[in-house]
Length: 136
Image (cartoon, rainbow, N blue to C red; front, side):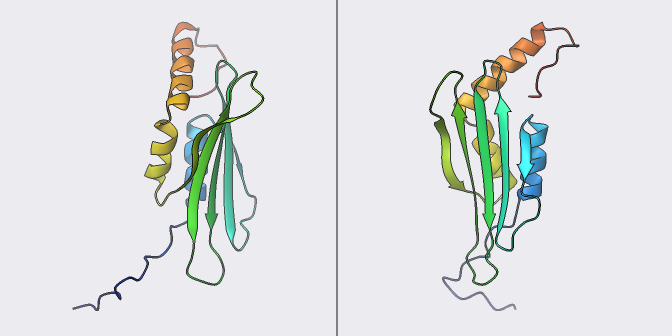
């Protein structure tokens, strides 16, 4: 029988989901920027998505993996700048994530983003196939 991990030992930190998050965001129609070369301690993915009425959503995923020490973390956040507004609104604040599924739930479960995607889908349904609208 295998020896059990000592009580209270922490599981390893979350794995770096950067490439998976970037790929998924692109599939949702986000313009994505990935940190060109991950630093020894940080990977970063940012993305923007503009809705039909001009609102702009900004997403950020960061994975911190220090070269020494057991502590690593991954978190994401998203905000929206409504059309004509001067200040952005928080869709969800920095939230720790361990799996891509959690990232998807945070983004797709946001009411403001869902409403913007619904408006875009409705507009797409009424336009001709040659219309040049962003992906949903």
